[in-house]
Image (cartoon, rainbow, N blue to C red):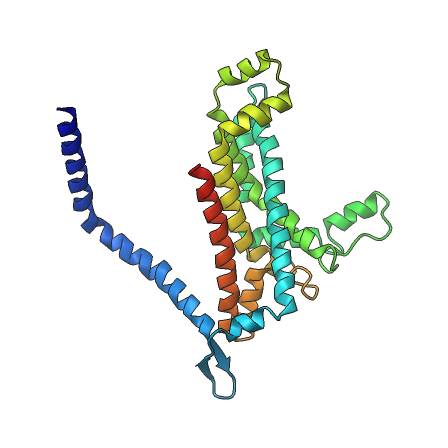
Length: 297
């Protein structure tokens, strides 16, 4: 009897799902139009090179990839992108975890107000954030004015120094990404039952041990989602570096998305820019595969 009911339930479920397919087709068509088609067209551009003399795109096979791996600027941009992503995401997670823990504390006054103000940097468009931080780090901006006020004789040239340009952009990116990570971690922390923490305290666990061995494993999936999304968004980020330094000085702060944009739209080498885009896609797919593998364990 139970087996018969289970089979009947499965039959009804399949019938209902099949009946929903016609209603999903328009959405799938739009999704393919705005996402899948541009992706296929972009990947197909990899196999073409623009010839200025004939003003035509000529099929070149894997020539763009051959040029790519001989390009020192590409390797510089790839290294910068890794530093940009790893440092930004790691700093976002550490700072946001501390903020989320504070905002989750029942002893904190004005919690609702502070939680609301946490979202302010996330509500500001990326270009506006970039312009704000560019102004802050100008040679005569607030950052150097503050350093001069405390006695620093020669404040650094934040945006034009090869050693500091990328790190200046990273600071702006961390500030802009903190709200999302904080709110997500706060939501995860609120799902942790207090009884678990009380039991850990009774067993003699310190605060740090409770966080590392009880709280973090309890919100593991939330942490994985946050880290994966921020890694993808940061690796793909374009606006902050473009507005603040334009990849300079030289290629000191050049990242892969910015380099792909320059080749495709400034140097009119769409095939070469598409090859860089394929590399970006491969790196992001690797991050997604690692996330899925971790979640399914």
